[in-house]
Image 1: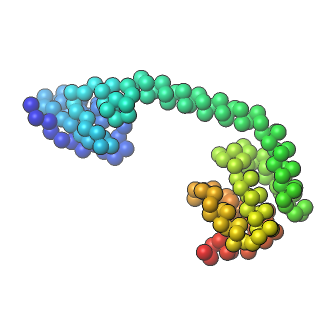
Image 2: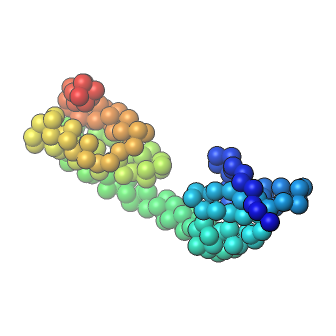
Image 3: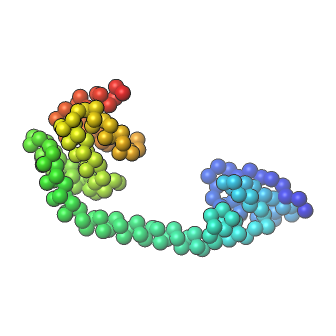
Amino acid sequence: MEYIKIDFDCGLSIIDSVKLLHSKTEATGKKYFGEFNGHKLTSDMTLDEAYIKCIGKTFKEFKDEQEKMRQDLIRREEEHKKKIPELTKYWIKEGHKALSQDKWGEWDRCVPIRLGDLYEGMELGQCLDIIKTVKDDSIAAGIEVMKNQGHSGMSWGLMKSMIYTFCDCGNEFVEALDNM
């Protein structure tokens, strides 16, 4: 019996693709296949066979790995939360070394917020690196540091806001950045 090709909708999971193939065969008595991320899945494959073909693991192995990753993430988040008081003291001290005194109050308010967000304070050190570079060298050099930090659109916007707020020439920095 020859296989009939079907197209999977964009975003369909492996499990839903296999279910679709099985249901088409059940409904018509014919055999079907479809391409899933470059892998040929057929209506006579088991779920495990499809998972092994696509990702090299059985469905259970995949689910177990996902659960382990989830538990690791939870553990890392809990460890980070426990460190926030200690990290807050550290980053406040570092900010006071690099920033003008008139920026300290806002920095002190910002630090625990940044430590508790998505980036877990990564942007604190990056902000200070840029500000130190601007002080020691130039705005252009600070912009180069920022460009080399590998920011996403969201972290790029956050960095611009932080530089604007904490750098003595933040307005000029952001203007130069926007005019590139």
